[in-house]
Length: 303
Length: 292
Image (cartoon, rainbow over all chains, first blue to last red; front, side, top):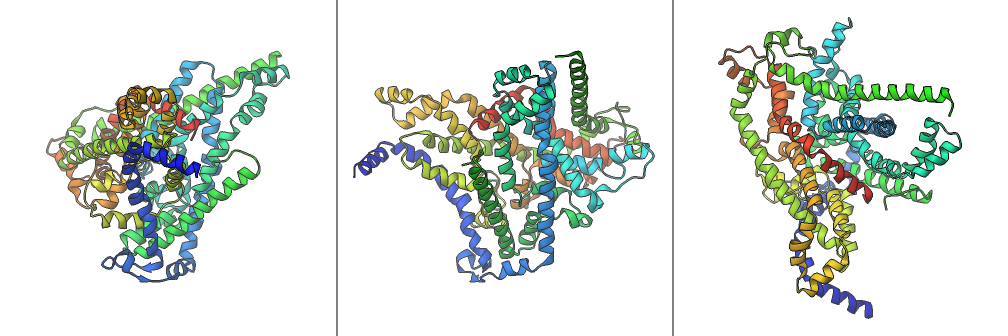
């Protein structure tokens, strides 16, 4: 009884807080929970004229149709492979850059490198894709260099085997600097006494980096790794949308670009929503599972 | 430490610096390359002669690009979407963060979970499209500026900042007869200028660079933001309009000149202000990473 009375008193005294909160709450209900409610159409035959509620129920029809579609599994493969390569090649890049920057004692130099490396983060996806399309064209910068070295020109954006390399290396180019900020922040928190102690024990700089610096930032690495795992089934899809061409669908087409093409452009709303739901659920399970595993091992977790 | 270790350390330092310089060149040269191609003579561009310096530079390409009605109009649209969108973003983010930062706000952990859940699970683009359509927002500016109104991560950054404001401030304000609304506008917001400035910058850049919402929700060319017009010119290669404008000026301008000039025109505002505001972005990231 007592806590209830207290709660009531608190509510009454924070009327203005509820008033302020009303607008954001309505926003989240309409623009975030509204679409979640709209997921219903994945189980219906959505018809624009009948709306979400009145369209006919279709059960698991749409799910069955994509699960037995070999092209769907190609999409899953492409999405997973792109993400696995991202984890292998992109994920360590900002950590390495942070460690290298940490070894620079000449602060002015360090600051200039940092400022330059953050810059591409502020370029839009369209700009980066535009640069890639033009640099990789047969008469573009890259092929000019290749030709001047005496090799044959390559039609990069027409060849499926090049797509992943292009996608991942341009991501590294764009995000390595910005991604390193969080690790540099963590590095500045490592206790300097630990380095003194390591030096006393005869550890050289390489050993200090392995035994003092890396463990010092391991919790940040863990958190970012968990977040990356949660994104395993979705991928920066705007860049793919801008870069892929008919011939490269073989490796470039992923779940989200397919949902956009088939669901929205092809107006196959229910089917698109079903594929999208499949993707959201797997992502959610992945992040919850990874977080559970991290907690069980007593490591850092998201919640 | 022995001499050998010191020597190895010096070699490492030199290699490290060389590597970082190479990284900087890899980042800067492509941007520089686009700039020198855009101002060079078209014949030299076609021959692939532009390496380190522009060849017979002129501003004709930029004149042709900036005369183009579609490009000018898209710039205007982007300006409108960016300012309106950012205003909505910052207002709603603060309105959301402030109550959630107050201990007396009953139900705040419930609301926080409700909001943070949307970071990890979402309806997907098709249901979102249906909601926007049902609200009648297709082909209006509101389809661009309303759906991304609150970025949960920035909201958390702002809440963390608000939480660091000591409780005594509220108590003395209550004694002076102020209510929570007044405290918010008169005390909390003025105290939070640094975090609000940083988050404003984040939102500004986001809107400036945004392209997918426009692709999804806008069908009229007159409403396109410049990122969408740029995509049509730079990636799809629709440069005919600008080429004819250039031809009327008697200048030798290739599609390549035009494409790179369009890219430079879109990134110029960012490049110009970047050196001055960069540190605020970094600070924002740091605040966010403390309790992200």
